[in-house]
Image (cartoon, rainbow, N blue to C red; front, side, top):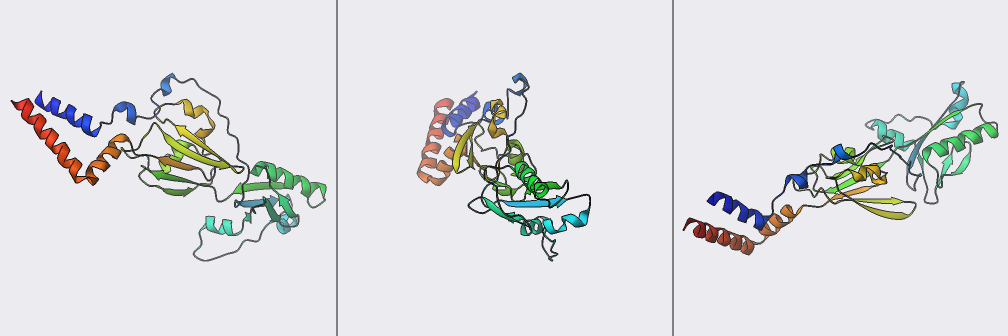
Length: 252
């Protein structure tokens, strides 16, 4: 009984993490199934695009593709980036044989359709297949995760939970009910506040990660309070004194 009282006082002083604050998507069983809608983000300045053109006659498409360069000690992804098309600040690229192309407000799929149309209408190629792929998509995770940092991804779709998984998941001290997601698209910044203990956010645009997203995981109250205690010797002595006084009162 005395131990229970002591534990209660300690929790009140230092703060206790509960099941409600730790478990993810706790109401997932009560959530209705919903159709997922993913809006592919438009190409942004400083993106690096891999553009491949192919036809039934492979030799005919050679002039419309960048030559492959063999470099030692360079990874496949790094090599692809060196051979990609850099998007300028005015949202254009210099494409082989077609000159300057605008990518403004276009997704990779829309750009591939536009290039295909020009190649056909201008008599360059017959029924070409054009593929556009973003090579340098990345996101950043900061704060209370096991492996904070910037991560590259090549998937066309990556969810927030997958991104957190790549960072090693939240630590036990991460604040799960207010994850911040910072997103910049078309020169506009949006900030989302996400409660991972609930499931309603899974039906919003914050479910999927966009290139250059930043995820911030703040420490929970327990971590903040303990950090303050450790950094303040006077506070530690005060807490110790309170605990000793409580023990004395309970043992009388």
